Length: 440
Ligand code: HSE
Image 1 (cartoon, rainbow, N blue to C red):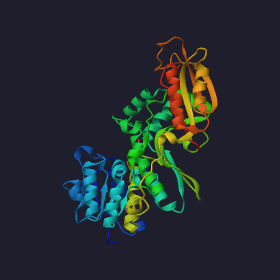
Image 2: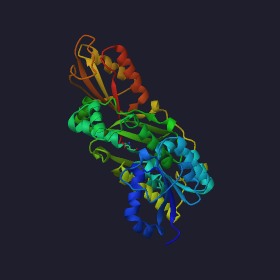
Image 3: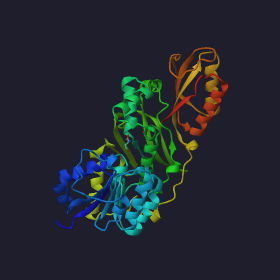
């Protein structure tokens, strides 16, 4: 088995280190499966970012990622540095132009530049593989790009961020506030010191952007994703959801509608009996609705060195076998322009929690604002006085009570107008909470 696949690895952090460990552990069996060895021949890494558990003294050190990308002695450039632009994008472009295959876990870069990088890869006749960029070890890219190609996909959705799922799971289990759980997660190393990308929904949106292109054959359009994070979720919402038979998850959803494609990331009520509701802690879950196959659900580790290295390795094995496919499943020139469905046109059920002054006429006024917008209420409950809940401001007369409503199917525009009217009427003491219910 001469003729090994020669790999240049840029970034020897958590994932890059995991890749070196995996190739060391399974090099022989991978060679047998792929028909040739996969050998890392050179690496490039920043010393302060280097995985301390991995010895790289046996590898040639490249001067920098861009020169590694063009190295005549490599066949594949593996980019595991991260970052939307900068040296990650420069080196990936250099590799593609030099006719090297590229494997990357960089969702931010692909979400912003996926269509142009795919075109560059095709021009050079090389692979641009990114299994590790979406949901870590879960093989969802390959599943959509290969296994589900016989289907028309109507929706792809999932729990794509382990940090958010961990926080929501702990809030539910322990009854703690978002802020308290986040602090604990940071102390235990589950959440980043700057968790904005995770909790604000941006990391999920990057991954969703890639799933959308794979599922619908459209150009990547990160700018079109509607994004809400989990910061506003309170223990009161989690408790109400539980009583109503739901769990709250941060979902990324891409849905084909008559007016275009919805791409949205937001806290979502999912019925407790569904597979996705059962996904707890740092796990990820991705579901695809295909017209012939029905629903396919994959669950697994969405982050971490070993799981993500598993995904990178499967991309390398494909290249070693000569299984080179268009990055997003169809030739880059055939990727259709993304047609956005406006969020205001989104249709679904809604959970609404209001902090309402317990006084005559308040309920009637709320009901009439909903009726004005043609919103039918499935259930409405006045739960309990909320004077002691955080964030409640008792500047007006009366003690506010939590009113929780579930609507029948309606539109986002109608709900927003109704809530604006309710706020103007002055019977509520805090900004209304609104959580979308996903039909599963
Ligand atoms: N920070 C991500 C998560 C993993 O918490 O799931 C990398 O995308």
